[in-house]
Image (cartoon, rainbow over all chains, first blue to last red; front, side, top):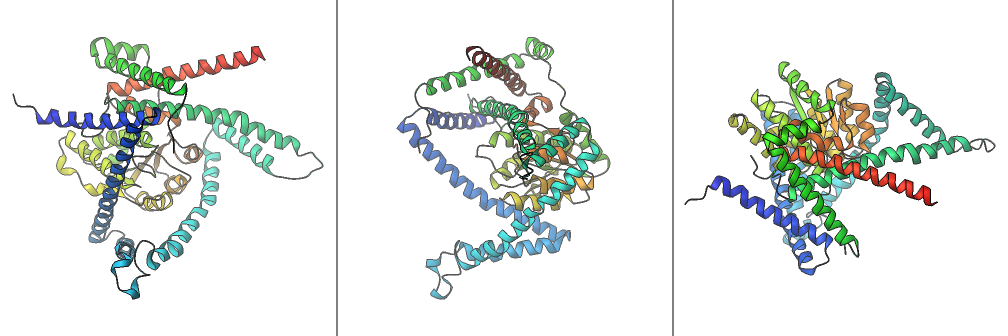
Length: 223
Length: 261
């Protein structure tokens, strides 16, 4: 009797995935040297797979932007992205030991070129963009307070209480009440709500994880 | 680093895990049994309405009618970390949107921040095209890797959202504070936005920029609401049972502490 490859293939994948998952989970619960060693091997495999995924991800970026350039849609940005990518990528992949003395400090993942790109281009840009968050928070809050109902009112009151309570003013000891109100707001309703949300999320993660570990759900090759 | 449990915690953890696993199997088996399972369980324990899941279908229809597309963001991390379960829930929503979109020739544009997620998302979209018999309509570039960094990802994905052809923005998965950089331009443009995350930091920003939104564990209910899969329905019932047990334990704990001083 010939086995149906369409049925065997997902079964093999499931057995492999479930076995690795169960061994990894058990190694975190039970103190056993064999399980710990196996977990280390699986983690090493994962790192190798991730490295290849990163390389293939680079191809995806190049492909998407090459298509944009071809179509003329936001082409200048895509050209800039690809040029920047090549300027950082090409010096970055060379080993300093395999190049002439004169350019040794310029290449490699810690060479001048990559270091310059991260230190003087990416980090300042990232910090500048992140600083825009303050304005975004303001506009988002403004829109929220205009369009929502009772929930917005609660949020507004809580925000005012926390803001006023956070201001450190010495008004003859009269600031104790706002500060106490702030502490109570953060420690009672806010903490209770946060814990409720976190408990729900933890349960969701637990059950989703078990579903995968038991092979009940198979996102890998599952049609 | 020794991460294993010690003392009484090991058998307790194993018993709890085994107990939940047995419950999961039993509920899935019950839900699979169409004659006395799915109907009776659904009738006895119906799910409450979640507006975000109801709205998804409508948003997709409106986008298709206007000849526009849906953008799906799957969060700012990848598969393999502690937030993999959250990403899988986002992928369930993507599968739903991709199947419905592929059927009418309007598959969503997906952006991811991690190469490990890129191939999984591509597989989901490709599989959705195959399921509806339109495998030829699949384009690998519909799923785009932006950057493996939350800020860079948010800024890169905004370029996609700012595109006039995007009518709906669905952001489900792990996000950090940078979520606001991603969502605010869409909110300013007035496009429909649906959001859900396991991050407490991102929740207030989601409240301000998305409507409807998935709060906390609602994201993990995606499979039960959007698919007919019994294992997802079983998961949701088990989550509810476990929540009730935790609430009971908290109440009993409070009573014991109060009464015993």
